[in-house]
Image 1 (cartoon, helix red, strand yellow):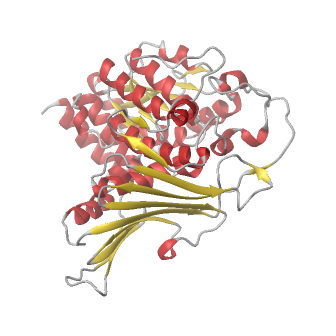
Image 2 (cartoon, rainbow, N blue to C red):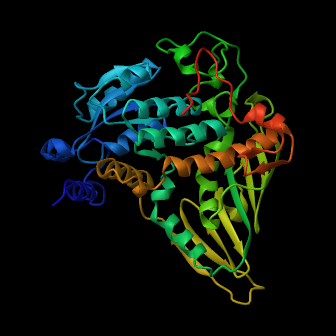
Length: 443
């Protein structure tokens, strides 16, 4: 039996069989990991371990043969908390090396793959440098913080021939695949409109506060990296970096890359012909944010329109769901969320179609990690559920919506030149300016 098949069987026992109650808390976990041959071991380093970076790390450690041997974060408190969590759950932390500078972690020769769970403005540089250092990469979404970053990340993967998985884990959930298969079956009839919405009532920016010194143990200069130099402000830090253009793109890039991804997959769509985005700070005008808390964007494709609709502070989205994708066809409408999918018949349809609710029954993040580790071992990049190419595609579409909103213009895309028809918009928004001596490599 091949090493790859052995690995898959061991992974299935751990994840599919429900052997682990958590990522670490099991004596059986230690026993099984000790039985894995050295050839089936995978050593990982985690860069950015506050939030999804840590969720990814825990998902990775549920896979037999995966070892965490390095962590990197600019906040020593976060590192200490994570090491304590590992230790409390009987994970041997003695061989885990600690860094605050990701470049030193990448110099560690026995690391096979890295997790990038930093704020968005760091994704491109770290992913490119990791590939250059010979590491495979699992990079959180959105993969790039600008359209040019997305292109450069794709070029780096191709140049260095590394396995790079984007953290759009919904691509590994079975019910999402089943729903898209139904869309592709043609049973919905002609689909003229796809609606994508994201209403997040729990998301709330921080109050406006005065600048201050960084908390003890925080390497703020390293956190800023290529972003604009400015004093530390608690309302722009950790989770809330999402609401500032220097570091991210608001809900459009935070949730949008998950949801728009399936709209594009369902319609087998490339890039839109035109984009117009309208919105503003309508929910929380008094709070600390730059990105819009309310945004409606219309994308024009050949043969159909795609509508993005997002709002913070309320949950009552379309079809009484706080998020989803609706493929509106002549025979019925398929509604897809993280929880499941269904088809509502069109009363005027000649060939009406309906389907009762199909509930999700698996863990997309864990399956996404099994797919990544399996592909690292097989080296067959085509097996990835969300390659860097796929991640860059949807991130580009999301960036287009933000650029239309920020420029205040309806934009037109020139696919022959891979840029907008308005050169002033290209100059202002295709690539975010880098600061503090950092430069985006030319691949």
